[in-house]
Length: 158
Image (cartoon, rainbow, N blue to C red; front, side):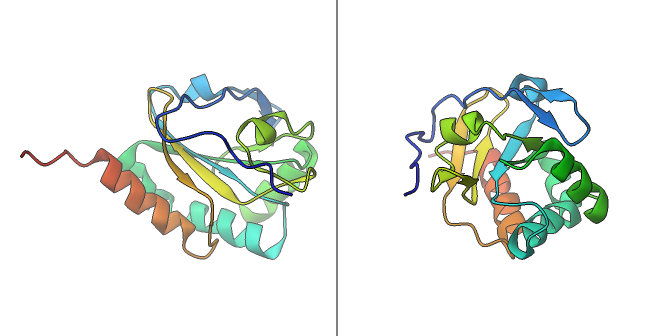
């Protein structure tokens, strides 16, 4: 059973308080001046999760003009994240949520044990602006770049 998110576009994003792969405590408010791409994924070093993480790594130049910070979250340990990030030279934080509190707060807990693959785009004011529930790891980084472009484009007059 999926723990479906009750969060909606326009809602304030729940705060984070998790350790990254280096052991640093990370809060969402640390990125208050940036757009945040908060993506949840099931497991380090598995085919789909590796593809998604490497696509975010490889598309970092596509996301840079949008002042966006990618942050990955799974219920794996900090040590697992450290190994995964080092092996694939990931250039963004991976947050460990073994207690599953943040994963549950975002409605991304699948079957009460792993994070399900979903992404939240959060604006610099801490509001959720997009929710991706059915993520294809092959093209997701490009979807995010397109969403950021749309969200940051000036609204047409009329």
